[in-house]
Length: 348
Image 1 (tube, rainbow, N blue to C red):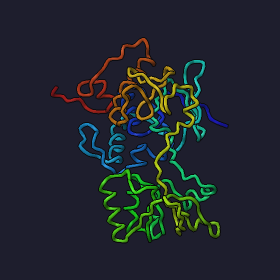
Image 2 (spheres, rainbow, N blue to C red):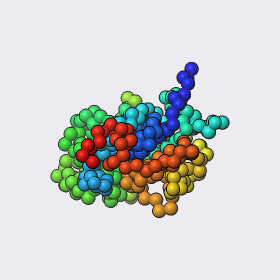
Image 3 (tube, rainbow, N blue to C red):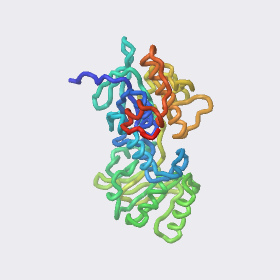
Image 4 (spheres, rainbow, N blue to C red):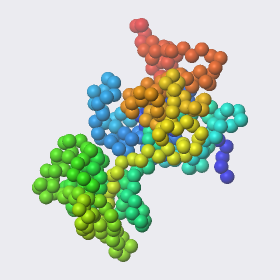
């Protein structure tokens, strides 16, 4: 039996940098939020895809990693007291007769919220998979689409498939930790940091790893375990490659998942919004960050932060139509100092 829903003014779907900053902007307007994310930890793509990669385009922060950005945002929103509901997807969203939205998650949690902020990046995280009949039987045993515990691959015969940053980063990481590493990519061109590509080629030259150009087209098993993969090169020649584990990095497929069924206006797998409120086609539901689309949209964290600020003000007006919402500055506003838990500067 499911319990009665948590009642709240705002639910944020997505705990990446933009979702976290949305907590802050709402908090300044004294709107408390619950945050739901499909990943087991906060940080979104920043944590999932490039936790240790440098980011250079956050204003006033010359350089920070995805992890540092996430940690700093968590520090910034601490006074706002948001509650996080992780490792679960929103499965259903239905508007009720009184205008509020009933939200259900895959962990059978329920929320009754006056406003919704979709900050879900590219949608629920779904890695592009290698489509081979029967291969999925080995998922999370010998076939992996993300690395959660790098130590489990030490001293293994490792095959890594892909040509982007994630594939190259893990190749470099495991080159001297695994028994051997083979990188497979369908062509001899890579979409990764030039330095990583250069290092990978140097490792090939010094026989510390090998590179195969081709595609995985089949596999062999032995005693119910994956024992070899079939690699077909561009000329159609095949070779059998023995392995212990297979890591596949084909990137993320933007799948809206259940969001596609919420009756919102969708444009090429993204949610259409206006640029005044960042409201969707349903009043009270806002979309910020990479998941939204509007004329001139740029997929930058920076843009998402701006969108979150305007969406928060729009929501404050939506929640209190009769109240005049004043723009206040964190530098000088005693009200905001109270919200933030900071002592005002007496000398002012």
